[in-house]
Length: 604
Image 1: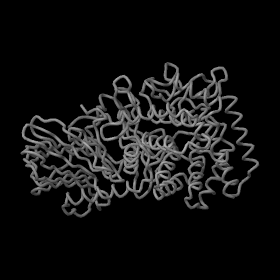
Image 2 (image 1 turned 90 degrees about the vertical axis):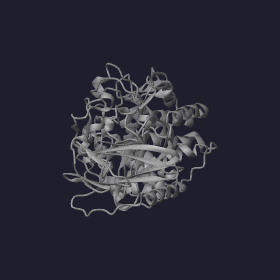
Image 3 (image 1 turned 45 degrees about the vertical axis):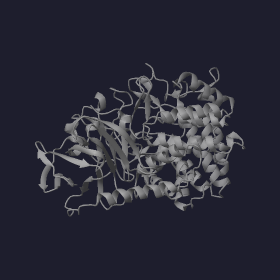
Image 4 (image 1 turned 180 degrees about the vertical axis):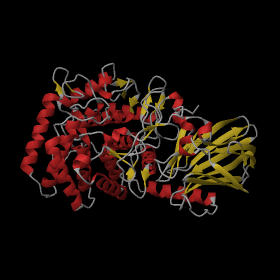
Protein backbone atom coordinates (compact mmCIF):
# COMPACT_ATOMS: atom_id res chain seq x y z
CA UNK A 1 0.00 0.00 0.00
CA UNK A 2 1.22 3.52 -0.82
CA UNK A 3 2.12 5.95 1.94
CA UNK A 4 -0.29 8.69 3.03
CA UNK A 5 -0.12 11.51 0.48
CA UNK A 6 1.46 13.86 3.02
CA UNK A 7 4.40 11.43 3.32
CA UNK A 8 5.56 12.29 -0.19
CA UNK A 9 7.98 14.98 -1.32
CA UNK A 10 8.09 16.40 -4.82
CA UNK A 11 10.98 16.62 -7.26
CA UNK A 12 10.87 18.41 -10.61
CA UNK A 13 12.99 19.75 -13.45
CA UNK A 14 10.45 22.12 -15.13
CA UNK A 15 9.51 19.37 -17.53
CA UNK A 16 8.40 16.43 -15.44
CA UNK A 17 8.37 15.34 -11.82
CA UNK A 18 8.64 12.55 -9.26
CA UNK A 19 7.22 11.77 -5.82
CA UNK A 20 9.56 10.38 -3.16
CA UNK A 21 8.16 8.83 0.00
CA UNK A 22 9.47 9.35 3.51
CA UNK A 23 10.67 5.73 3.27
CA UNK A 24 13.06 6.68 0.45
CA UNK A 25 10.99 5.07 -2.31
CA UNK A 26 10.33 6.88 -5.61
CA UNK A 27 6.73 5.78 -6.19
CA UNK A 28 5.84 8.09 -9.08
CA UNK A 29 7.87 9.27 -12.07
CA UNK A 30 6.71 10.20 -15.57
CA UNK A 31 9.33 10.35 -18.34
CA UNK A 32 10.05 12.49 -20.24
CA UNK A 33 7.07 14.86 -19.61
CA UNK A 34 4.49 15.44 -16.90
CA UNK A 35 1.86 13.73 -19.03
CA UNK A 36 4.03 10.82 -20.19
CA UNK A 37 3.46 7.29 -19.06
CA UNK A 38 4.88 6.65 -15.59
CA UNK A 39 7.79 4.25 -15.19
CA UNK A 40 7.28 4.18 -11.40
CA UNK A 41 3.56 3.76 -10.62
CA UNK A 42 3.53 2.15 -7.16
CA UNK A 43 1.66 5.25 -5.99
CA UNK A 44 -1.42 3.97 -7.81
CA UNK A 45 -0.77 0.26 -7.46
CA UNK A 46 1.96 -1.75 -5.76
CA UNK A 47 5.68 -2.45 -6.01
CA UNK A 48 5.16 -4.58 -9.12
CA UNK A 49 3.98 -1.43 -10.93
CA UNK A 50 7.38 0.18 -10.47
CA UNK A 51 9.31 1.97 -7.74
CA UNK A 52 12.89 2.77 -6.71
CA UNK A 53 13.68 2.12 -3.06
CA UNK A 54 16.70 3.48 -1.18
CA UNK A 55 16.93 2.84 2.58
CA UNK A 56 18.92 0.91 5.23
CA UNK A 57 18.67 -2.85 4.73
CA UNK A 58 17.73 -3.59 8.33
CA UNK A 59 15.41 -2.06 10.88
CA UNK A 60 15.52 1.74 10.70
CA UNK A 61 13.48 4.90 11.14
CA UNK A 62 13.16 8.28 9.47
CA UNK A 63 15.33 10.73 11.36
CA UNK A 64 14.77 13.93 9.38
CA UNK A 65 13.57 15.11 5.99
CA UNK A 66 13.86 18.52 4.39
CA UNK A 67 14.47 20.45 1.24
CA UNK A 68 17.68 22.42 1.18
CA UNK A 69 16.86 26.09 1.86
CA UNK A 70 15.16 27.77 -1.14
CA UNK A 71 15.83 24.67 -3.24
CA UNK A 72 14.21 21.56 -4.66
CA UNK A 73 17.05 19.28 -3.56
CA UNK A 74 15.61 16.81 -1.05
CA UNK A 75 17.52 15.33 1.89
CA UNK A 76 16.17 12.32 3.81
CA UNK A 77 18.02 10.95 6.85
CA UNK A 78 17.56 7.45 8.25
CA UNK A 79 18.81 6.23 11.62
CA UNK A 80 19.47 2.61 12.51
CA UNK A 81 21.51 0.70 15.09
CA UNK A 82 24.66 1.02 12.97
CA UNK A 83 24.51 4.74 12.29
CA UNK A 84 22.89 7.51 10.24
CA UNK A 85 22.69 7.82 6.47
CA UNK A 86 21.41 10.63 4.25
CA UNK A 87 19.77 10.20 0.84
CA UNK A 88 20.00 13.28 -1.40
CA UNK A 89 17.55 13.36 -4.32
CA UNK A 90 16.95 15.80 -7.17
CA UNK A 91 15.96 16.09 -10.80
CA UNK A 92 18.70 18.14 -12.50
CA UNK A 93 17.63 21.32 -14.28
CA UNK A 94 19.17 22.21 -17.66
CA UNK A 95 21.28 19.06 -17.64
CA UNK A 96 20.80 18.07 -21.28
CA UNK A 97 18.98 14.84 -20.37
CA UNK A 98 15.86 14.07 -18.33
CA UNK A 99 17.20 12.33 -15.25
CA UNK A 100 16.77 11.59 -11.56
CA UNK A 101 19.89 11.44 -9.41
CA UNK A 102 20.35 10.00 -5.92
CA UNK A 103 23.35 10.23 -3.59
CA UNK A 104 23.69 8.17 -0.41
CA UNK A 105 25.91 9.90 2.17
CA UNK A 106 27.27 8.31 5.33
CA UNK A 107 26.69 10.56 8.34
CA UNK A 108 27.50 8.33 11.33
CA UNK A 109 28.84 4.78 11.64
CA UNK A 110 28.60 2.20 8.85
CA UNK A 111 25.16 1.48 7.41
CA UNK A 112 24.16 -1.41 5.18
CA UNK A 113 21.84 -0.10 2.42
CA UNK A 114 19.45 -1.81 0.04
CA UNK A 115 18.04 -0.47 -3.23
CA UNK A 116 15.60 -1.99 -5.69
CA UNK A 117 15.00 -0.19 -9.01
CA UNK A 118 11.91 -1.75 -10.58
CA UNK A 119 11.03 0.08 -13.82
CA UNK A 120 7.67 -0.66 -15.38
CA UNK A 121 6.87 1.50 -18.40
CA UNK A 122 3.38 2.67 -19.43
CA UNK A 123 2.00 3.08 -15.90
CA UNK A 124 3.33 -0.21 -14.58
CA UNK A 125 2.07 -2.36 -17.44
CA UNK A 126 5.26 -3.09 -19.42
CA UNK A 127 8.22 -5.05 -18.03
CA UNK A 128 11.31 -3.77 -19.86
CA UNK A 129 14.16 -5.69 -21.40
CA UNK A 130 17.21 -5.24 -19.12
CA UNK A 131 20.86 -5.49 -20.14
CA UNK A 132 23.75 -5.15 -17.70
CA UNK A 133 27.09 -3.58 -18.66
CA UNK A 134 29.12 -3.54 -15.47
CA UNK A 135 27.68 -0.79 -13.30
CA UNK A 136 25.36 0.40 -16.07
CA UNK A 137 21.92 -1.05 -16.75
CA UNK A 138 20.03 -0.46 -19.98
CA UNK A 139 16.25 -0.84 -19.68
CA UNK A 140 14.09 -0.60 -22.79
CA UNK A 141 10.64 -1.39 -24.15
CA UNK A 142 9.03 0.15 -27.23
CA UNK A 143 9.62 3.91 -27.34
CA UNK A 144 11.01 4.09 -23.79
CA UNK A 145 14.58 3.49 -22.70
CA UNK A 146 16.52 4.37 -19.55
CA UNK A 147 20.07 4.03 -18.34
CA UNK A 148 20.70 3.33 -14.66
CA UNK A 149 24.27 4.16 -13.58
CA UNK A 150 25.63 3.58 -10.10
CA UNK A 151 28.81 3.29 -8.04
CA UNK A 152 27.76 -0.23 -7.07
CA UNK A 153 26.61 -3.18 -9.16
CA UNK A 154 22.99 -4.25 -9.34
CA UNK A 155 21.99 -7.87 -9.61
CA UNK A 156 19.05 -8.35 -11.96
CA UNK A 157 16.61 -10.90 -10.55
CA UNK A 158 13.48 -12.07 -12.32
CA UNK A 159 11.37 -10.48 -13.57
CA UNK A 160 13.68 -7.56 -14.46
CA UNK A 161 14.17 -6.41 -10.86
CA UNK A 162 17.60 -4.80 -10.31
CA UNK A 163 18.62 -5.13 -6.63
CA UNK A 164 21.77 -4.09 -4.79
CA UNK A 165 23.09 -3.98 -1.23
CA UNK A 166 26.09 -1.93 -0.20
CA UNK A 167 27.67 -0.36 2.87
CA UNK A 168 28.30 3.35 3.31
CA UNK A 169 30.55 4.72 6.06
CA UNK A 170 30.59 8.17 7.63
CA UNK A 171 32.09 10.64 5.17
CA UNK A 172 31.60 8.39 2.14
CA UNK A 173 29.01 8.64 -0.63
CA UNK A 174 27.50 6.32 -3.24
CA UNK A 175 25.90 7.78 -6.38
CA UNK A 176 23.05 6.70 -8.66
CA UNK A 177 21.47 8.23 -11.76
CA UNK A 178 18.51 7.26 -13.94
CA UNK A 179 18.45 8.88 -17.39
CA UNK A 180 15.72 8.69 -20.02
CA UNK A 181 16.62 8.74 -23.71
CA UNK A 182 14.41 8.91 -26.81
CA UNK A 183 14.42 6.06 -29.34
CA UNK A 184 17.63 5.68 -31.35
CA UNK A 185 19.38 8.38 -29.33
CA UNK A 186 23.08 7.84 -28.68
CA UNK A 187 24.03 6.31 -25.35
CA UNK A 188 24.48 9.11 -22.77
CA UNK A 189 27.76 9.57 -20.95
CA UNK A 190 27.73 8.78 -17.23
CA UNK A 191 27.07 11.89 -15.15
CA UNK A 192 28.80 13.39 -12.14
CA UNK A 193 26.02 13.15 -9.57
CA UNK A 194 27.66 15.46 -7.04
CA UNK A 195 28.15 18.18 -9.64
CA UNK A 196 24.55 17.88 -10.82
CA UNK A 197 23.20 18.12 -7.28
CA UNK A 198 25.19 21.27 -6.52
CA UNK A 199 24.33 22.80 -9.89
CA UNK A 200 20.61 22.11 -9.40
CA UNK A 201 20.73 23.46 -5.85
CA UNK A 202 22.34 26.66 -7.15
CA UNK A 203 19.77 27.06 -9.93
CA UNK A 204 16.89 26.86 -7.47
CA UNK A 205 18.50 29.17 -4.90
CA UNK A 206 19.22 31.77 -7.58
CA UNK A 207 15.64 31.57 -8.82
CA UNK A 208 14.22 31.86 -5.31
CA UNK A 209 16.42 34.90 -4.63
CA UNK A 210 14.41 36.83 -7.22
CA UNK A 211 11.27 36.64 -5.06
CA UNK A 212 10.38 40.10 -3.80
CA UNK A 213 8.09 38.95 -0.99
CA UNK A 214 9.49 40.02 2.40
CA UNK A 215 6.51 39.40 4.68
CA UNK A 216 6.20 37.17 7.72
CA UNK A 217 5.25 34.13 5.63
CA UNK A 218 8.31 34.16 3.40
CA UNK A 219 9.26 30.50 3.88
CA UNK A 220 5.77 29.31 2.93
CA UNK A 221 5.58 31.69 -0.02
CA UNK A 222 8.99 30.74 -1.44
CA UNK A 223 8.30 27.02 -1.05
CA UNK A 224 5.02 27.48 -2.90
CA UNK A 225 6.67 29.50 -5.67
CA UNK A 226 9.39 26.87 -6.13
CA UNK A 227 6.66 24.23 -6.37
CA UNK A 228 4.81 26.27 -8.99
CA UNK A 229 7.96 26.82 -11.01
CA UNK A 230 8.67 23.09 -10.92
CA UNK A 231 5.12 22.40 -12.17
CA UNK A 232 5.83 24.59 -15.20
CA UNK A 233 6.66 22.96 -18.51
CA UNK A 234 9.71 24.65 -20.02
CA UNK A 235 10.22 26.17 -22.50
CA UNK A 236 6.51 26.43 -23.33
CA UNK A 237 5.44 28.23 -20.14
CA UNK A 238 2.29 26.24 -19.33
CA UNK A 239 1.74 25.15 -15.73
CA UNK A 240 0.16 21.78 -14.93
CA UNK A 241 -2.51 21.65 -12.25
CA UNK A 242 -0.68 18.88 -10.37
CA UNK A 243 2.07 16.30 -10.79
CA UNK A 244 -0.23 13.30 -10.53
CA UNK A 245 -3.32 11.60 -11.80
CA UNK A 246 -6.08 9.81 -9.91
CA UNK A 247 -5.15 10.62 -6.33
CA UNK A 248 -8.68 10.52 -4.90
CA UNK A 249 -10.85 13.37 -3.68
CA UNK A 250 -12.54 10.75 -1.52
CA UNK A 251 -10.57 7.75 -0.27
CA UNK A 252 -11.90 4.63 -1.95
CA UNK A 253 -14.17 6.68 -4.23
CA UNK A 254 -14.46 7.39 -7.94
CA UNK A 255 -13.55 11.09 -7.99
CA UNK A 256 -10.11 10.38 -9.44
CA UNK A 257 -8.95 12.66 -12.25
CA UNK A 258 -5.85 13.38 -14.30
CA UNK A 259 -4.47 16.82 -13.40
CA UNK A 260 -1.28 16.78 -15.49
CA UNK A 261 -2.65 19.44 -17.84
CA UNK A 262 -2.97 23.23 -17.94
CA UNK A 263 -6.28 24.70 -16.76
CA UNK A 264 -7.57 28.07 -17.95
CA UNK A 265 -9.44 28.23 -14.62
CA UNK A 266 -6.13 28.94 -12.87
CA UNK A 267 -4.88 31.47 -15.43
CA UNK A 268 -5.39 34.84 -13.74
CA UNK A 269 -4.37 33.72 -10.28
CA UNK A 270 -1.22 32.18 -11.74
CA UNK A 271 -0.33 35.40 -13.53
CA UNK A 272 -0.94 37.56 -10.45
CA UNK A 273 1.11 35.22 -8.27
CA UNK A 274 4.09 35.44 -10.60
CA UNK A 275 3.81 39.19 -11.14
CA UNK A 276 3.43 40.10 -7.49
CA UNK A 277 6.39 37.90 -6.57
CA UNK A 278 8.71 39.53 -9.08
CA UNK A 279 8.71 36.83 -11.75
CA UNK A 280 7.79 38.99 -14.73
CA UNK A 281 9.52 36.76 -17.28
CA UNK A 282 7.60 33.68 -16.11
CA UNK A 283 4.36 35.69 -16.16
CA UNK A 284 5.08 36.80 -19.73
CA UNK A 285 5.79 33.18 -20.72
CA UNK A 286 2.45 32.14 -19.21
CA UNK A 287 0.68 34.93 -21.10
CA UNK A 288 2.33 33.79 -24.34
CA UNK A 289 1.45 30.16 -23.71
CA UNK A 290 -2.16 31.17 -23.12
CA UNK A 291 -2.26 33.25 -26.28
CA UNK A 292 -1.02 30.31 -28.37
CA UNK A 293 -3.27 27.77 -26.67
CA UNK A 294 -6.56 29.64 -27.09
CA UNK A 295 -5.81 31.04 -30.55
CA UNK A 296 -8.39 30.14 -33.18
CA UNK A 297 -12.16 30.08 -33.27
CA UNK A 298 -13.58 31.40 -29.94
CA UNK A 299 -16.28 28.73 -29.89
CA UNK A 300 -13.56 26.07 -29.81
CA UNK A 301 -11.77 27.39 -26.73
CA UNK A 302 -11.09 24.61 -24.21
CA UNK A 303 -11.16 24.69 -20.42
CA UNK A 304 -7.78 22.90 -20.32
CA UNK A 305 -4.95 22.10 -22.68
CA UNK A 306 -1.97 19.82 -22.93
CA UNK A 307 1.53 21.06 -22.13
CA UNK A 308 2.02 22.56 -25.58
CA UNK A 309 -1.60 23.54 -26.09
CA UNK A 310 -2.89 20.14 -27.23
CA UNK A 311 -6.68 19.94 -27.27
CA UNK A 312 -7.34 16.20 -27.48
CA UNK A 313 -6.94 14.67 -24.02
CA UNK A 314 -8.92 11.41 -24.33
CA UNK A 315 -9.84 9.83 -21.01
CA UNK A 316 -8.89 6.19 -20.42
CA UNK A 317 -9.14 3.87 -17.43
CA UNK A 318 -6.13 1.76 -16.43
CA UNK A 319 -7.74 -1.41 -15.10
CA UNK A 320 -4.43 -3.07 -14.15
CA UNK A 321 -3.80 -0.50 -11.41
CA UNK A 322 -5.58 -1.05 -8.09
CA UNK A 323 -5.75 2.69 -7.36
CA UNK A 324 -4.50 4.70 -4.42
CA UNK A 325 -5.89 2.87 -1.36
CA UNK A 326 -8.37 1.12 -3.65
CA UNK A 327 -9.68 4.33 -5.24
CA UNK A 328 -10.76 3.32 -8.71
CA UNK A 329 -10.90 3.85 -11.58
CA UNK A 330 -7.40 5.10 -12.30
CA UNK A 331 -7.74 7.54 -15.17
CA UNK A 332 -5.37 9.15 -17.65
CA UNK A 333 -6.53 11.94 -19.91
CA UNK A 334 -9.49 14.09 -18.97
CA UNK A 335 -12.87 14.02 -20.69
CA UNK A 336 -13.72 17.39 -19.17
CA UNK A 337 -11.47 18.95 -21.83
CA UNK A 338 -14.49 18.72 -24.16
CA UNK A 339 -16.79 20.64 -21.83
CA UNK A 340 -18.25 24.09 -22.41
CA UNK A 341 -17.38 26.46 -19.58
CA UNK A 342 -18.34 30.09 -19.81
CA UNK A 343 -16.02 31.18 -17.01
CA UNK A 344 -12.84 30.59 -19.05
CA UNK A 345 -13.67 33.58 -21.24
CA UNK A 346 -13.56 35.77 -18.17
CA UNK A 347 -10.28 34.24 -17.05
CA UNK A 348 -8.62 34.80 -20.43
CA UNK A 349 -9.82 38.39 -20.64
CA UNK A 350 -8.66 39.02 -17.08
CA UNK A 351 -5.20 37.58 -17.78
CA UNK A 352 -4.57 40.01 -20.62
CA UNK A 353 -5.97 42.88 -18.57
CA UNK A 354 -3.72 42.09 -15.61
CA UNK A 355 -0.70 41.68 -17.88
CA UNK A 356 -1.26 45.16 -19.33
CA UNK A 357 -1.87 46.61 -15.86
CA UNK A 358 1.44 45.21 -14.60
CA UNK A 359 3.50 46.45 -17.53
CA UNK A 360 3.97 43.31 -19.59
CA UNK A 361 4.45 44.72 -23.11
CA UNK A 362 1.18 44.40 -25.04
CA UNK A 363 0.83 42.43 -28.24
CA UNK A 364 -1.50 43.51 -31.00
CA UNK A 365 -2.54 39.89 -31.52
CA UNK A 366 -3.73 39.72 -27.90
CA UNK A 367 -6.29 42.49 -28.39
CA UNK A 368 -7.45 40.96 -31.68
CA UNK A 369 -8.05 37.72 -29.81
CA UNK A 370 -9.91 39.57 -27.07
CA UNK A 371 -12.13 41.33 -29.61
CA UNK A 372 -13.05 37.99 -31.19
CA UNK A 373 -13.78 36.52 -27.76
CA UNK A 374 -16.07 39.45 -27.01
CA UNK A 375 -17.93 38.99 -30.30
CA UNK A 376 -18.57 35.37 -29.36
CA UNK A 377 -19.45 36.13 -25.74
CA UNK A 378 -21.99 38.78 -26.68
CA UNK A 379 -24.13 36.09 -28.32
CA UNK A 380 -23.38 33.19 -26.00
CA UNK A 381 -23.10 34.45 -22.42
CA UNK A 382 -26.72 33.51 -21.74
CA UNK A 383 -26.18 29.83 -22.62
CA UNK A 384 -25.98 27.14 -19.88
CA UNK A 385 -22.61 25.52 -19.30
CA UNK A 386 -20.81 22.87 -17.20
CA UNK A 387 -19.49 25.31 -14.59
CA UNK A 388 -16.08 25.81 -12.99
CA UNK A 389 -16.11 22.38 -11.29
CA UNK A 390 -16.58 20.50 -14.58
CA UNK A 391 -19.98 19.14 -13.69
CA UNK A 392 -20.73 15.98 -15.65
CA UNK A 393 -24.49 16.39 -15.32
CA UNK A 394 -26.77 18.52 -17.54
CA UNK A 395 -25.60 22.03 -18.37
CA UNK A 396 -27.03 24.76 -16.18
CA UNK A 397 -26.91 28.51 -15.72
CA UNK A 398 -24.16 28.51 -13.10
CA UNK A 399 -23.96 31.83 -11.27
CA UNK A 400 -20.16 31.87 -11.12
CA UNK A 401 -20.01 31.37 -14.89
CA UNK A 402 -22.21 34.43 -15.44
CA UNK A 403 -20.08 36.47 -13.04
CA UNK A 404 -17.01 35.56 -15.05
CA UNK A 405 -18.83 36.55 -18.25
CA UNK A 406 -19.38 39.92 -16.58
CA UNK A 407 -15.66 39.96 -15.77
CA UNK A 408 -14.78 39.40 -19.42
CA UNK A 409 -16.86 42.39 -20.52
CA UNK A 410 -15.55 44.54 -17.68
CA UNK A 411 -11.94 43.88 -18.72
CA UNK A 412 -12.78 44.67 -22.35
CA UNK A 413 -14.18 48.02 -21.22
CA UNK A 414 -10.99 48.60 -19.27
CA UNK A 415 -8.97 47.96 -22.42
CA UNK A 416 -10.73 50.89 -24.06
CA UNK A 417 -10.95 53.26 -21.09
CA UNK A 418 -7.56 52.64 -19.45
CA UNK A 419 -5.37 51.60 -22.35
CA UNK A 420 -6.88 53.42 -25.34
CA UNK A 421 -7.67 50.29 -27.33
CA UNK A 422 -10.38 50.24 -30.00
CA UNK A 423 -13.76 48.76 -29.17
CA UNK A 424 -17.53 49.44 -29.07
CA UNK A 425 -17.47 50.95 -25.59
CA UNK A 426 -21.16 51.84 -25.30
CA UNK A 427 -22.27 48.39 -26.48
CA UNK A 428 -19.96 46.68 -24.00
CA UNK A 429 -21.18 48.87 -21.15
CA UNK A 430 -24.77 47.95 -21.96
CA UNK A 431 -23.79 44.28 -22.06
CA UNK A 432 -21.99 44.50 -18.73
CA UNK A 433 -25.05 46.06 -17.11
CA UNK A 434 -27.32 43.42 -18.67
CA UNK A 435 -25.24 40.55 -17.27
CA UNK A 436 -25.02 42.23 -13.86
CA UNK A 437 -28.78 42.63 -13.63
CA UNK A 438 -29.32 39.07 -14.81
CA UNK A 439 -27.02 37.64 -12.12
CA UNK A 440 -28.51 39.71 -9.34
CA UNK A 441 -32.06 38.81 -10.35
CA UNK A 442 -31.61 35.09 -11.05
CA UNK A 443 -28.52 34.04 -9.12
CA UNK A 444 -29.23 35.75 -5.80
CA UNK A 445 -31.63 34.52 -3.12
CA UNK A 446 -32.81 37.61 -1.17
CA UNK A 447 -34.52 35.54 1.52
CA UNK A 448 -31.34 33.63 2.36
CA UNK A 449 -29.12 36.64 1.53
CA UNK A 450 -26.72 34.69 -0.65
CA UNK A 451 -25.84 34.00 -4.23
CA UNK A 452 -26.68 30.44 -5.27
CA UNK A 453 -24.88 27.77 -7.27
CA UNK A 454 -27.05 28.11 -10.35
CA UNK A 455 -30.14 30.04 -11.34
CA UNK A 456 -33.22 28.92 -9.43
CA UNK A 457 -31.33 26.66 -7.02
CA UNK A 458 -31.00 26.80 -3.25
CA UNK A 459 -27.53 25.24 -3.15
CA UNK A 460 -24.31 27.04 -2.31
CA UNK A 461 -21.02 27.07 -4.19
CA UNK A 462 -17.69 28.37 -2.88
CA UNK A 463 -16.76 29.67 -6.34
CA UNK A 464 -19.20 32.52 -5.58
CA UNK A 465 -16.52 33.93 -3.28
CA UNK A 466 -14.80 35.07 -6.48
CA UNK A 467 -17.51 37.70 -7.02
CA UNK A 468 -15.78 39.96 -4.52
CA UNK A 469 -12.22 39.39 -5.71
CA UNK A 470 -12.97 39.99 -9.42
CA UNK A 471 -14.80 43.23 -8.60
CA UNK A 472 -18.34 42.16 -9.53
CA UNK A 473 -19.46 43.65 -6.21
CA UNK A 474 -17.56 45.42 -3.45
CA UNK A 475 -16.51 42.91 -0.82
CA UNK A 476 -18.49 44.80 1.82
CA UNK A 477 -21.72 44.83 -0.22
CA UNK A 478 -24.49 43.20 1.81
CA UNK A 479 -24.94 40.54 -0.87
CA UNK A 480 -21.29 39.56 -0.63
CA UNK A 481 -21.35 39.64 3.17
CA UNK A 482 -24.41 37.41 3.11
CA UNK A 483 -22.73 34.98 0.69
CA UNK A 484 -19.57 34.80 2.81
CA UNK A 485 -21.66 34.19 5.93
CA UNK A 486 -23.66 31.47 4.17
CA UNK A 487 -20.46 29.74 3.03
CA UNK A 488 -19.13 29.83 6.59
CA UNK A 489 -22.38 28.41 7.98
CA UNK A 490 -23.12 25.73 5.39
CA UNK A 491 -19.95 24.78 3.53
CA UNK A 492 -17.36 24.85 6.30
CA UNK A 493 -16.07 21.80 8.15
CA UNK A 494 -13.50 22.47 10.86
CA UNK A 495 -13.07 25.95 9.41
CA UNK A 496 -12.29 24.62 5.92
CA UNK A 497 -14.49 25.12 2.86
CA UNK A 498 -16.22 22.47 0.76
CA UNK A 499 -16.59 23.32 -2.94
CA UNK A 500 -20.37 23.12 -3.08
CA UNK A 501 -23.39 21.66 -1.32
CA UNK A 502 -23.03 17.90 -1.64
CA UNK A 503 -25.97 15.67 -0.83
CA UNK A 504 -28.37 13.30 -2.53
CA UNK A 505 -29.52 16.09 -4.86
CA UNK A 506 -26.02 17.09 -5.94
CA UNK A 507 -25.65 13.90 -7.99
CA UNK A 508 -28.15 15.36 -10.45
CA UNK A 509 -25.76 18.27 -10.95
CA UNK A 510 -22.31 16.63 -11.05
CA UNK A 511 -23.36 13.06 -12.02
CA UNK A 512 -21.16 11.68 -9.23
CA UNK A 513 -21.89 10.11 -5.85
CA UNK A 514 -21.66 12.71 -3.07
CA UNK A 515 -18.64 12.93 -0.83
CA UNK A 516 -15.21 14.54 -1.04
CA UNK A 517 -12.82 16.45 1.19
CA UNK A 518 -12.78 20.17 1.82
CA UNK A 519 -11.23 22.16 -1.01
CA UNK A 520 -8.11 24.02 0.10
CA UNK A 521 -8.07 26.76 -2.60
CA UNK A 522 -11.66 27.71 -1.72
CA UNK A 523 -10.62 28.11 1.90
CA UNK A 524 -7.91 30.56 0.84
CA UNK A 525 -10.59 32.41 -1.18
CA UNK A 526 -12.67 32.71 1.97
CA UNK A 527 -9.69 34.27 3.75
CA UNK A 528 -9.24 36.72 0.84
CA UNK A 529 -12.86 37.85 1.17
CA UNK A 530 -12.50 38.34 4.90
CA UNK A 531 -9.44 40.53 4.34
CA UNK A 532 -11.37 42.58 1.79
CA UNK A 533 -14.19 42.98 4.34
CA UNK A 534 -11.76 44.19 6.98
CA UNK A 535 -12.00 40.96 9.03
CA UNK A 536 -8.25 40.46 8.96
CA UNK A 537 -7.92 38.59 12.26
CA UNK A 538 -10.39 35.94 11.08
CA UNK A 539 -8.60 35.69 7.75
CA UNK A 540 -5.22 35.26 9.41
CA UNK A 541 -6.55 32.50 11.66
CA UNK A 542 -7.85 30.60 8.62
CA UNK A 543 -4.61 31.16 6.73
CA UNK A 544 -2.44 29.87 9.55
CA UNK A 545 -4.74 26.86 9.94
CA UNK A 546 -4.16 26.13 6.25
CA UNK A 547 -0.40 26.46 6.71
CA UNK A 548 -0.59 23.86 9.47
CA UNK A 549 -2.05 21.37 6.98
CA UNK A 550 1.06 21.43 4.78
CA UNK A 551 3.23 18.35 5.06
CA UNK A 552 6.68 18.37 6.65
CA UNK A 553 8.30 19.78 3.49
CA UNK A 554 5.68 22.50 2.92
CA UNK A 555 3.45 20.92 0.26
CA UNK A 556 -0.33 20.92 -0.17
CA UNK A 557 -2.65 18.69 -2.15
CA UNK A 558 -6.00 19.73 -3.59
CA UNK A 559 -8.21 18.70 -0.67
CA UNK A 560 -8.18 17.63 2.97
CA UNK A 561 -10.16 14.88 4.68
CA UNK A 562 -11.35 16.31 8.00
CA UNK A 563 -12.36 12.85 9.28
CA UNK A 564 -9.04 11.07 8.75
CA UNK A 565 -6.94 14.26 9.07
CA UNK A 566 -5.18 13.53 5.80
CA UNK A 567 -4.32 15.34 2.59
CA UNK A 568 -6.26 13.96 -0.38
CA UNK A 569 -6.49 14.73 -4.08
CA UNK A 570 -3.74 15.27 -6.63
CA UNK A 571 -0.40 16.42 -5.26
CA UNK A 572 1.19 18.86 -5.09
CA UNK A 573 -1.68 21.01 -6.30
CA UNK A 574 -0.78 24.22 -8.15
CA UNK A 575 -4.03 26.01 -7.33
CA UNK A 576 -3.55 25.42 -3.59
CA UNK A 577 -0.07 26.94 -3.71
CA UNK A 578 -1.18 29.80 -5.98
CA UNK A 579 -3.94 30.63 -3.50
CA UNK A 580 -1.50 30.41 -0.57
CA UNK A 581 0.80 33.00 -2.13
CA UNK A 582 -2.04 35.35 -3.04
CA UNK A 583 -3.55 35.23 0.44
CA UNK A 584 -0.14 35.88 2.01
CA UNK A 585 0.07 39.04 -0.08
CA UNK A 586 -3.46 40.06 0.90
CA UNK A 587 -2.57 39.72 4.57
CA UNK A 588 0.71 41.58 4.30
CA UNK A 589 -0.14 44.43 1.96
CA UNK A 590 -0.73 47.98 3.14
CA UNK A 591 -4.14 48.34 4.78
CA UNK A 592 -4.35 52.10 4.27
CA UNK A 593 -6.48 52.03 1.08
CA UNK A 594 -10.13 51.00 0.74
CA UNK A 595 -10.56 47.25 0.84
CA UNK A 596 -12.36 47.01 -2.49
CA UNK A 597 -9.36 48.55 -4.27
CA UNK A 598 -7.40 45.39 -3.51
CA UNK A 599 -9.80 43.27 -5.53
CA UNK A 600 -8.58 42.34 -9.01
CA UNK A 601 -11.13 44.65 -10.61
CA UNK A 602 -10.84 46.17 -14.06
CA UNK A 603 -12.63 49.39 -14.89
CA UNK A 604 -14.77 49.42 -11.77
